Image (cartoon, rainbow over all chains, first blue to last red; front, side):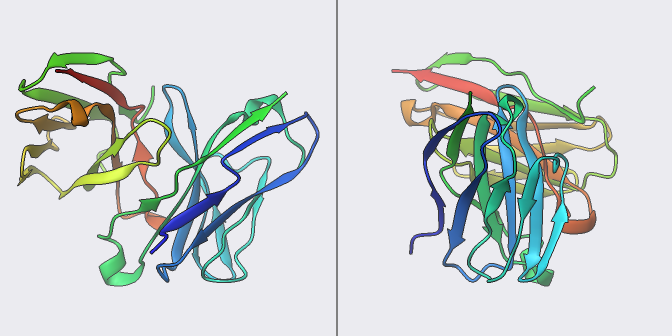
Length: 116
Length: 112
């Protein structure tokens, strides 16, 4: 059972470049989300999805796009990378519904992204 | 002011000590309170989950929630070097998407 898998683990980009951070889960979780973690800031929600075809914005959505075509995958796209997007990005998933609201979120091990 | 405040540490204690980690918050709508442990270069993993006020114990870990003071705590008894990690508090209300709000994390070091 792989859980939540994020790729790549590390990436360096130049300002203005675009890229996609991949996230896949094999637990049949409906709820998936993307966070960024910056020193002293904790984790901040970027976007989330409650199921295939449904996405919504979190606390810090600007500069990022998401889509959810399958239950398993939830990619995060940086359209035009900026130095302010240098961060560690975490994908998480959990069950939804009555049982899901009390279920823990399972996190991947993160993608460390540097924008030069 | 952040919604959730957490002392960043680092907090250094000797092995076997009792550790107290704390968070304060400002949003009275928060009802669900969690503590996550995060090892270096890993994702957070859930340690404790508490609904509303009260205490919850799980092995060496005890979580306390005082909603009247907007204050939550995590106690670790008989701390071990393997407890060395960053501890994040997180909380949410019954908001759309059940979004979590995280504290900044406290780095704990337990010395043998």
